[in-house]
Length: 127
View 1 (cartoon, one colour):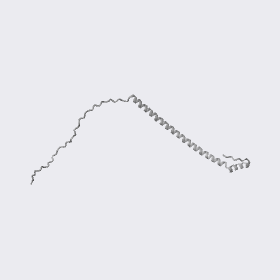
View 2 (cartoon, rainbow, N blue to C red):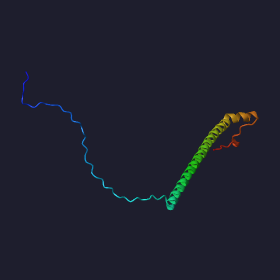
View 3 (cartoon, rainbow, N blue to C red):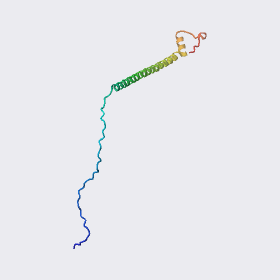
View 4 (spheres, rainbow, N blue to C red):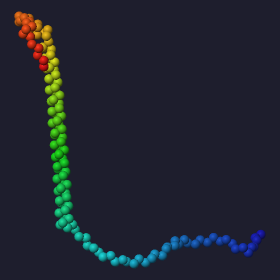
């Protein structure tokens, strides 16, 4: 038994979706003067080339100085090594002199050649 009521029925009605667009304001064209781009002037070219030449010269001088310093350091190391070797040789020779000038060795060689010890002819030499 259908009840009749005076209430409105809910009807589903499909309404096509239309996105709302915001009204776009009219764009007034702003007149900007067209500037013609001028190339590099002769003065700018001269300035750039002179800066590049100076930069290249500084780099060349820097490299030259680095090479000179490295060469000088190598020479210094060679000289230091040579001095160390000479010092070692001198110390070895000094030790050999000390060994060869021992009193008992000199006395033995003197007896071998028939020399006698005379205290009056002996002098002490201090280095």
